Amino acid sequence: MLEILHYRNGIQGKLEGLFSRPIPYWSSDIEIEVKAIVDTVRDLGDEALVKLTKEFDGVNLSQQGLRISLQTIEQAYRAVDDEFLTAIREAIANVTRYHQRQKVSSWSFSDADGVDLEEHSVPLERAGLYVPGGKALYPSSIVMNAVPAKVAGVNRIIVALPPGNAHNPYILVTLGELNLGEIYTIGGAQAIAAMAFGTETVPRVDKIVGPGNIYVTLAKRYVYGVVDIDMLAGPSEVVILADQTANPQFIAADMLAQAEHDQMALAVCITTSQRLAEQIQREIARQIKGLKRREIIAQALTDHGVILIVEALDEGVELVNRIAPEHLELMTANPRQTLPRIRNAGAIFLGHYSPVPVGDYFAGTNHVLPTGGTARFSSPLSVYDFLKRYSVVEYSRSRIEKKGHLIRRLAHIEELGAHEKAIELREQEHKDQELKKSKSMRSLSTE
Image (cartoon, rainbow, N blue to C red):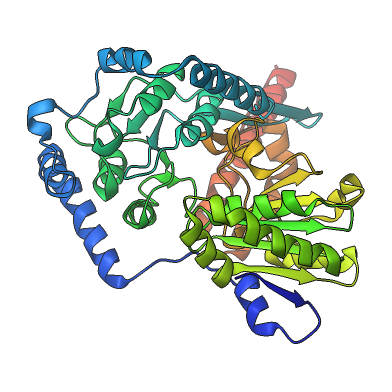
């Protein structure tokens, strides 16, 4: 089920799968279907939402309406236990505290020559939050996507909640705790289209965030450019870099936790210890027996799992940076010493008591992370994703006089005559005024 391989012993085939994990875009047939759904909602608005929701979800929105009432959310509180309320409230507080440190200030500077340059950060006006439907139940996903938007100062957060989860008390209470009251009972590609283009009922947003199935992901890709999106997420991933000090029970449990997401999940352990590798292998065989999703886990570990033995931690660090995993656990004697050498990872978990679920639910860092090797160039979802920046330039007349000829020279090289003229007119205005002033002075002196 889970192979142990020595990195240098001709395992290129297996490694190619680790190093090259493009985000899957699925079949062209699904893309065609998604485009048709999106185009229909764009053209027909609410009429299309009602029709498609009845077709795909078996729910008649024309009778119950598109929007979930605040009363429905209030009633949901009666169905959840106190421990859940405590947990979700503390999770929201932790995530908020972390993301508040990401807030950025506007800045400006001036020089003696009459130049003022500024950069201002402003929040997006509206964000759309997609909540996964089907059998999935992810209150934590709502927290991770909503909190950065709220901290950024987004004015309106529009929630698309598929009918399958529209009455789930844990989802509704989480939305209530975040004060998200603009919730629409729509899902799938049609929900993405509604938020991207707007309908008679659903407002158009500036950015769409939140995970979903292949239809949702492809719809987000299709509407990108009309609106911004968070990312195109692929299967979940964990890489664990461990030495002989690591606990094999912990590593096995963490690999199983990642593999239970789906059959495509990646679970890799890189270690310097042959003994540890064998212990992990035995632990996985033991622990998997009691898990409900063991068939999914077994498939994931067979296809996308491996224990790699390396000669030294340096070699392991090199591998980590090549894989660029979504999650990286450093279970070594001195993880802080290794940390500065890691360049490519979505989130890093240090030490033996920082498993991925701590970050998934509670610590405060965001669990919306780059996958498929995209951690080479992208980052976790954050407050920055809900801010836009604009620059401000203020030049003085004296600055134009001093530097106008240089600006005109650059415009001339690019053969943009109107650009040249825009500068030249301002220079000429000053020359004309100086000439007029000179004539006036001469006139006064002759009187």
